[in-house]
Length: 319
Ligand code: FAQ
Image 1 (cartoon, rainbow, N blue to C red):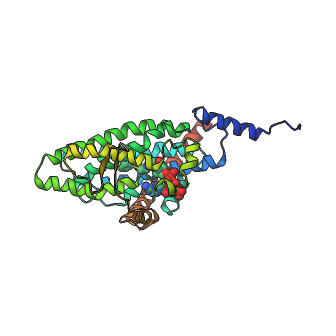
Image 2: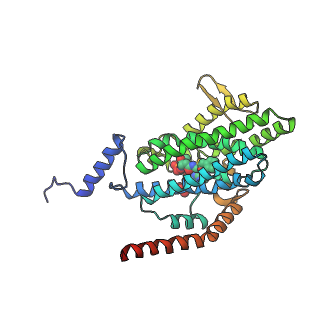
Image 3: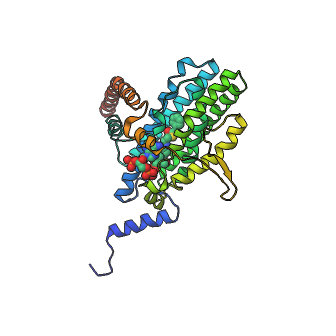
């Protein structure tokens, strides 16, 4: 070996960096640093778990939707969320992860899911507010992920974002309908807004100064914006929407800052965020218990699918 010879690993690393720098995509067949792969599995798995656990708060209202139309819309939305979870688990599998292992890590409390799904849905107005604020926040966070450097994740996000946009609109339309109703219905919308506003802001993650993953994720172009940038974008977008609906956002410090050309807003309760992320939120135990029960109940389906696949393979071999 001469002094100037480069090892294959160095060349591969250079190719990886060059791909990122030129805004091209890393594909599963490409070499990638182990830390990049690990960070992607971490983020994509958490995202997939969020979609699956995220079916529960709204799913509870499927049998109690106030009309056939609302039931059909909600059913379609909750089914979409299951589909999003499946695309995302598939994207994680292209990185060598196994979805059965990921599900087990979730059930064992070793992988996270979004804090937002640990809050209860107390009235049907919560279904509308989840669409408006939770899906609204998800869109703000996820549209930039369509340009994420990892191909399968970016492509999954394109489809997911299209569906999230329908989800957001159905929520807003439901709220607009309730706001045109009785004083009790309007009060229900205001109450749901009061309860979901702050947890929605927490969806964007800790402040940039306390976010251990942001800097590296931005350098790898997995993330395109910081947590605080996206949170600010969401606040700026939500204020005129709240005004159009006729609801008040529960933050006395919220006001337009003409110097910054953004809205200022109050301090987020980061202690609450930490509690909820560490398993101490109002519904954490219930959400995981429900997920575990569904997984256990589905065992016979997985066994049947494996037996069927083996039978098909044996038939193919015999033929
Ligand atoms: N909840 O260093 P960072 C939906 C964790 S939308 C729980 O800033 P990162 C659609 C974070 O994972 C919801 N944990 O991390 C829907 C990390 O932990 P780790 C899902 C959180 O990755 C709507 C630690 O804190 N969306 O499901 C939260 O750079 C309606 C330090 O944080 C996504 O997952 C949180 N809120 O930035 C479904 C989007 N925030 O891994 C049903 C993709 C942070 O070191 C109904 N993910 N943590 O142990 C992302 O964009 C990023 O992962 C962030 C966090 C922005 C969530």
